[in-house]
Length: 206
Image (cartoon, rainbow, N blue to C red):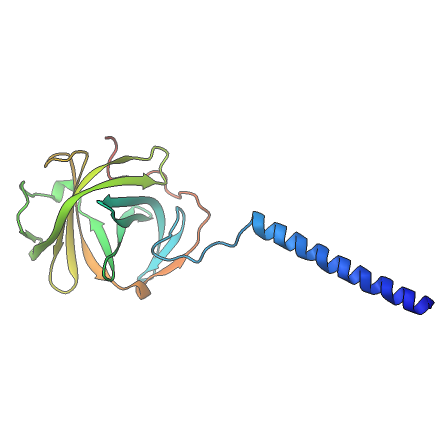
């Protein structure tokens, strides 16, 4: 009888310990959920985008909405170098790796034409419109309007002209050139949720 009683105590103790451990793990999991796997749709400030043997840090996130159609652009930095990763999903996923052109090198006349010759390459306009945008990741996030003009060139090359601050052909203009890329070219790593280089922006004020 004594042996049976001790055996029952051991089993009851094991069950009690197992249930207590489950409760702790559930509480821990509820308070600290596992980080979602990174994709081009859910990058966060401080995340790392690896491309062509370089590490780029997500500094600012731009979210666009054109009458319900949405897309994302990430401002990435590696030291003093800046690029934009544009993520558009319509019938298929389109990723563009874009480099901003210094303002002193931009010479475009308004209104923009259907064809642009830039740096010896001819680009044809494939889309344009007006979208609402907002930023994430800056100490003073922004919300406003952006005109966009998307151009396509040979060999996956692309060019974009974006005008911020007004619904008309005025305001802060940014021209970027780059190329279409494939998602498998990128490696995405979670960061610590903090900006590395400080605030970066396309528009200082609205």
